[in-house]
Image 1: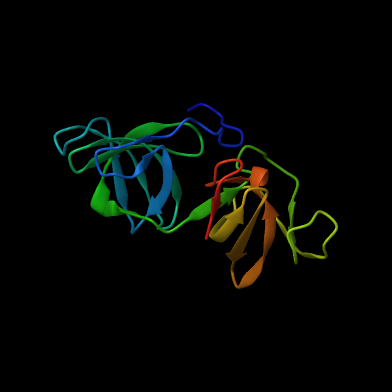
Image 2: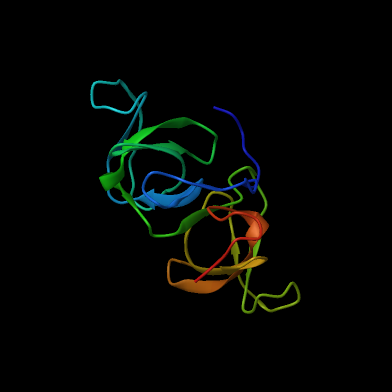
Length: 157
């Protein structure tokens, strides 16, 4: 699998579902089998073993979605196994060092927690530079470029 840094903004197009491609989603339940092609006849490439893992949807075909994980691995999943819930992994491309979770969306704001690489967070909103997230009951703001699960400059609530 290829290592991946922060998700790069890509030109978006509209898929057959009417939703933009690419876009982020998350696994709805567990386990979730990722297949080599868009049917149950295709071999299972790998399995997500916990719900809420962020994935990037890059293609749509009938009831199947081609997805990419934070490490760059790609495969196909039935769309019913994904959720529109926005989650992210904190700096999964790093092996050590923590990322500050701040009280306000400013680099000088009080740090409420230090988050290790690879920690799964729920995203409430992003303003293009910062995302309001929560993990294990702790809420705060994290720099958007420090997570995999939101595009640079992406804004949503």
